[in-house]
Each structure stands twice: as C-alpha cells, then as structure tokens.
Image 1 (spheres, rainbow, N blue to C red):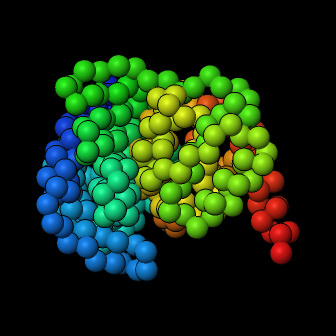
Image 2: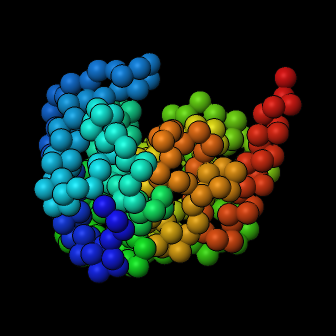
Image 3: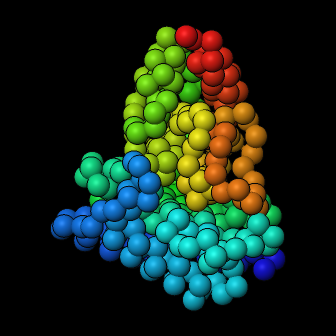
Length: 285
C-alpha cells in the first residue's frame, strides 16, 4: 500500500485511538487478577495479557485498514514478512514494559505506530493503569486524552542546557547505572529511572521530563515508532544514539544503536554526552 494522504492519516486517529483504548481496558482487567507469565528468553517475560491485547489490536487494524502489514511484537514473523518492501506498515507493542506489568509498578503502555516511507507518521500510546492516552503524528498536532476524555495539546520542554535537564533512563537495562552515574558527574540536574519506552517518551512529549536516552540496544522498531511520532509532533527530536534517524523499512527490527528523545535544544548536547559516556565505558578497566 502507498502512503496515506494527510486526510487519511487524520481520519485514522480516532479508530486507532479507540483500538488502543480497548486493548488498554483489557490489559487493566487482567492486571488486577492472576495472570500467566512465561519467558521468551532470560529476563524477557510475556503474559496472557500481551497475547490477548496483541490479537485484539492486530484484528482491529486488519479490519479497519486492510492490506497494511502489522509488525507486532507477539505475532509470528511470517505474519508480517516482507513489511520492509512496502511503503506503509503498522508497528504494535501490546504491552510496552512487560517487566513493569509483571512487577506491578504501573509503568507500561499500549503502543500503536504507523510508518510510511520508512518514517514514523502516527503514534498512539495509552496507559492501562490510569487511562491517559497520547496521540501525534505528521500533520497531526500532539495531544493528551485524560481518563474522562478531555483533550489538551502537549509540547516538549523549553530547557536549553543539559545541566538543567531531567534525564530519563531505563529502569531495567543493564547499562542504565553507568549512564546515570556519568550523567550525574557531568552535571545533569536529575536522573530518573523509568520503565517502558512509551512512558518515557510521553513524559518527554508533555514536557514532564527533558531527555530520554538509551545507549546500546534499545528494543525493537515497535518500541520506537509510536514514541517517535508523538515526540516529534510535540516539537521534539528523535534519533538513535548516534544521531541517525530510524528507518522503519529496515529488515532488521532491532534498534541496535540506542534511542534518544529530547527537545531540539538539548538533542546535540545529549548526543555528545552519550559519545563521552561510551568512550568512558570503553576505556574504564
């Protein structure tokens, strides 16, 4: 399928938001009771809530937008084979932050992103615990929806010096402690561990925090698409840790070179911080 027109993308907002909210309601119900946990690999849990939400979202997207591949975390790879050769694809993470879901700390989200010509053009993120939702995309101003349905525009912060910034880092990634320590030594005002790429990205998009940085491996393309679309729509910048834009037509789904979401003023400063952190990591015995 070719790229959507601006009007088609704008019309897609409400049905995709409704799908993500239905998935979030399902997840919230399962979160309150006993749920099943298994492991795809060490430290990589999956629950029945992941699988049920994945099925709901994929079925809904396929019905509403036939012909567009759906690259979803809990789907079998053959279900989206060849997505890298088409202009338009959905990227779905039914529960971004499954570790946080299992730990019951509330830091997880439903994420649905649209990529066209290799770039993120629409994102919807919903928090199952409190019902907050976030939307943004190319030609679509970023906004938040609270649990009552009220909407308000969102915007990244205006902090211009990294010394005044709050940096969000991964709660569970093995490198988070070294990055946090290096950032603190270099004068970053506050370093806050947080679960879920989606939760961190929405805190950047709303200006609640200033920087989300993850060096090294940063999940998969379904962890990046919706966050990128929303942060950029809110006036921010998103790249990997080298400053390279994400390519959602890449055959390799892994985000091997990190993830950075900031306001425009901080972006080059964060890339320099990560460069120095990587150099320090390599030279420290």
